[in-house]
Length: 319
Image 1 (cartoon, helix red, strand yellow):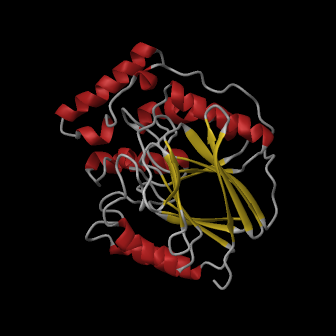
Image 2 (image 1 turned 90 degrees about the vertical axis):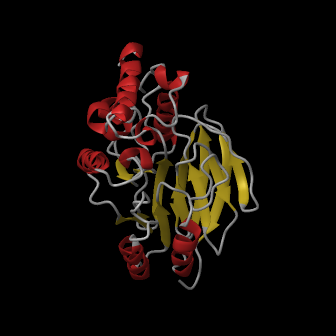
């Protein structure tokens, strides 16, 4: 897609506002130069299935808010491919907003197929937590069509679901309204409560788009702490991954749970530090996580390859 075509995609998305789709779902945040300027997709061949495989080992990546298709998105995707070449990972957890400025059917090649091609060709799996730009923050007719396209194009089994990889159980949530925090959204929380109670694996990781704790532009999601935190704390979840705010932030453990915002997949917005913040910074990045037996080591890797944060968790006793 050349620059003129990319601008047309953005203007076309804005045009849908007049047709009643709503500004926030398609053109927020507003177009920036870095969104418009096309990036060069990573062009490399990676060794297929090179990641370590054993019952007590998992190496994975996580990225949120990567759906512009512009230069900055390509820079992060290229860094992911470069990192795979040195420290291979077999899974990418997508933390929502995988497509901006148009619908996924039209933009799939630009926002996913091209930037992630080296990883896809290497056999890496992708798992998705639904985001607000993916469904316009509500289950409208247009939003549901976007969700249906995502489920089909990415092979996602449901709006919320669980997967197991080695020593880790993942719990992917639909945090859009009314998916998780709305007044009539108790079904998903009941499902999560039951699924976590049934989990017997060593590690539990919850992935969603809207962060329960955030010091970024959007801030902590209203209702998330009251509705979600008691569930994940009660079941000894180790790590909660989210996107939505275009920054990186890691909390101190809260009731034993570490919360990480990783929304710097293609653009950045300011972030401050709160009383719960261990580390926060406004950078383009993705996460690389290595789980070995009773140890989880995470790194926030910038688009330029520098490591912005490191953290380590130990598996908790007495689950």
